[in-house]
Length: 183
Image (cartoon, rainbow, N blue to C red; front, side):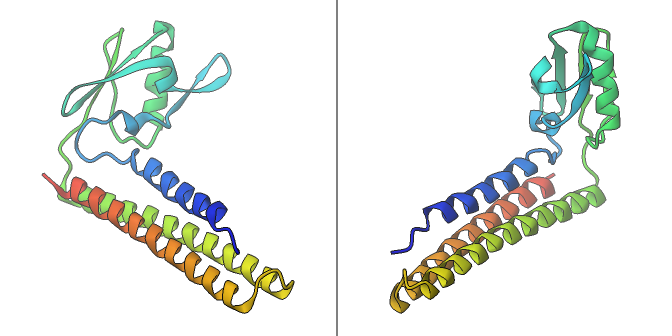
């Protein structure tokens, strides 16, 4: 019998990476995930802002970054300006405020396309896992480890897994797109 659990883990990982990538796309509301990947130089080492500061959402459109070490404030501000967050930080000397403006219709469509692109990449990744599994099945069939019937059953099982994870990706895309397009 062919074990699909390793391939299922890889497919799940592909979807998890996709969902993580989506957390950095803002949908007109303040979200700490937007700056999760922004790094700054701290004593010569790239360090994530979220590891060196308290990040809080004060209202629906404002994110406040309070660094643990106030000397890092300028470096964090510079990193935010250089990042693709698209929001100019407001440094008052002790905290950095990010005010999220209302998204324009054009920007909403751009973000929706970006979500769809990330989704397509996730689907390709899931399909690549399916391809690897099917190659493994064919190899085991050729080496007489699997019978013809077992190979067919295994291919069917792998296809069902693929379909399920593709549906998951589609559902996440639809949810995020609705979130972005909501005013």
